Amino acid sequence: MESKILNALGIDPAFIFLFMLILFVVLFILYVNVTMKYNRLKNSYATFMKGKDGKSLEQSLKDKFEEAEAVLKFTKQNRTEIRELNRKLETNYQKVGIVKYDAFNEMGGKLSFALAMLDGNDSGWIINAMHSREGCYTYVKEIVKGESYVELAEEEAEALDKAIFHDIEKIEKSEIIEK
Image (tube, rainbow, N blue to C red; front, side):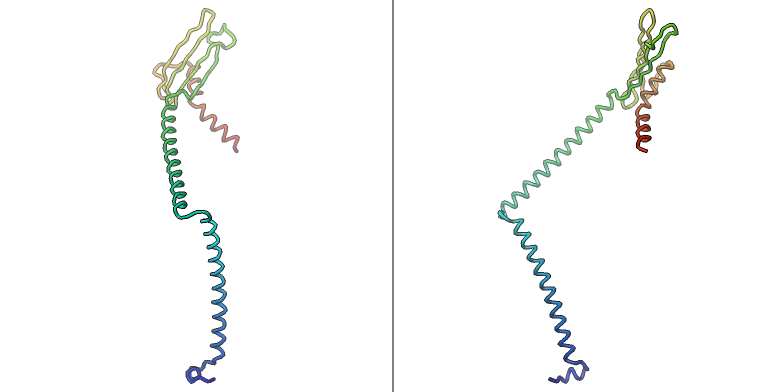
């Protein structure tokens, strides 16, 4: 079989036949691949929809959205409560420092003490109890933002420093342990 067009172009009909055969094989392979993917998708869809119709599927989705909204509402409520707790904790006594000492040289056993109690803003009280043979004397000094308007005794200042820097010492110790 001779073709004037193919002869004029200089193309052998065997090359066209070979090209068509290769194209047919490639298209067949692609067809098989697409068919396999379609069957997998069809099986997945059938498994997903097993025992459900459109309305029950819609109800399932509605239920899940309602659950998600409830969780979101609960989370917002928890955040609000946590903020409120943190605000309340600012005014609670969180930091404590105590120093025991001998108020008078003739007394032994370190029965006197200075106790500093501070909140999150380093405000609070220093209680100094001095024990002697005649009795016990107790003094209270107010602390505002880590400062006292009344001069502090050495033991009171030490108790105040322990209370203020107690958290920093814990952090430094934990960093040393982690290293």
